[in-house]
Amino acid sequence: MTKQPVTPKVRCAIYTRKSTEEGLEMEFNTLDAQREACEAYIASQKSEGWFLVPDRYDDGGFSGGNMERPALKRLLKDVEAGRVNVVVVYKIDRLTRSLMDFSRLVEAFDKRNVTFASVTQSFNTTTSMGRLTLNILLSFAQFEREISAERIRDKFASSKKRGMWMGGHPPLGYEVKDRKLVINETEAETVRWLFRRFVECRSVTQMVRELAETNTLEKRGRHLDKPAIYRLLKNHLFIGKVAYHGEVYEGEHEGIIEQAFWDQVQAVMASNDHYQPGRIRVQTAALLKGIIRCRHCDRAMRPTFTCKEGRRYRYYTCHGADKNGRETCPLRTVPAGEIEAVAINQVRTMLRSPEMVVKTWQASEGISERDVTDALRRLDPIWEELFPVEQQRLVQLLIARLDVEKGGVKVHLRTEGLDTLARELGDIGSGKEVMA
Image (cartoon, rainbow, N blue to C red; front, side, top):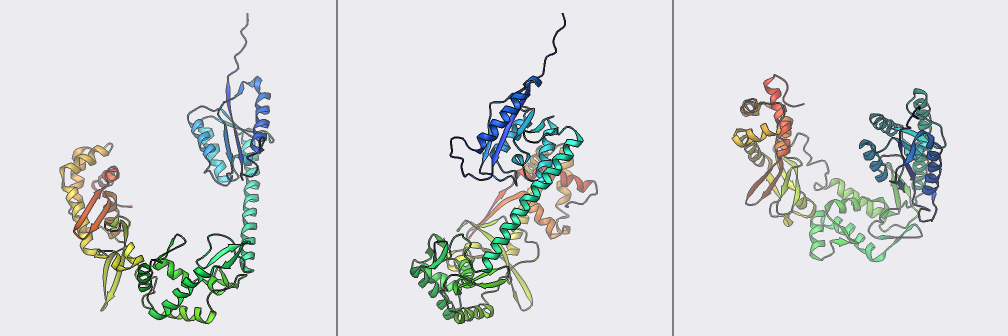
């Protein structure tokens, strides 16, 4: 008696997607319609061993232009785990509208021998002709998405040129009624005071201090710090105009500030030594940038500098003091050279310690303890020969955070960087460059 061949079971997963949430509350929505068509298609392949897995992969309200979709991520995890053999969709653009994303998906499917099927389009991704057809259709889907995006941008630009308010959080002094900006007289008085006071005192720092003293620092839940006030003073909305891509157009809304007075404020800002946005930016590598913090304010400190008699003096300034006034922070600034020397000494001490040798060796793979010891010892004496950017990278590899307060400095080490350190130190002994 001849045995009948056993048809292998093929596990099928249905993926559905809708770009908006509109209509999803209905008892039978577009996701259900997609799924019903896919279920019928899988049933038609029953003789081939196809059957539907119980898990649902539905993304309602998610764009097909990117991969940031919860159900899609869950589907890819199940593909990686070997729980799916075929991915079934109603149309190819339900899976993605991006040709680049599609190529990534096909690559992920191929790694697990997973095929792809579309109910309304006959495809087989295991053949070169199927791939070509899919790529052509994906190209048109991506083209359609880009055309739609261009239409939206053109409409936005056209509306701006007509002076229309295009949504978002209304600025101080205004509220939105019937999708248009309308003056809020109570807040408008604060705006007028800010403009008048700036011309009088020519100091935003002084204004922030006065606002804090009168308990008017918070407006509609937004913090009026120095950067916020500078942005407010330069905003064309307050003279009834709309700025877009460097051009200024007449707005549909009424202005709060007269044009002549607004021009006077701009002239003061242009001549005011306290308003030079690029003046304090450090162009060279700052050793502790991104890891140094003021412990009093729990705020980051940023590199700044001043020039006196042709010499440059570098500092790290508390971000809180810079935004809210120097008197709000007991630390304010610290000399960059001194605090960087503390960090460098800490790193060099670490490199000499037996504990660091053991930790680095344990974190590394394929490097002997003796090689790690030799590499660490070689790095210490050549520290001064490293370029500043190389020193910065090594410091930030080993130090997670450096907290500064009036009483001293606390260094938090970064142990997860030891594996990278071990390999780069191994390159020193082989004659390779230490840093890329």
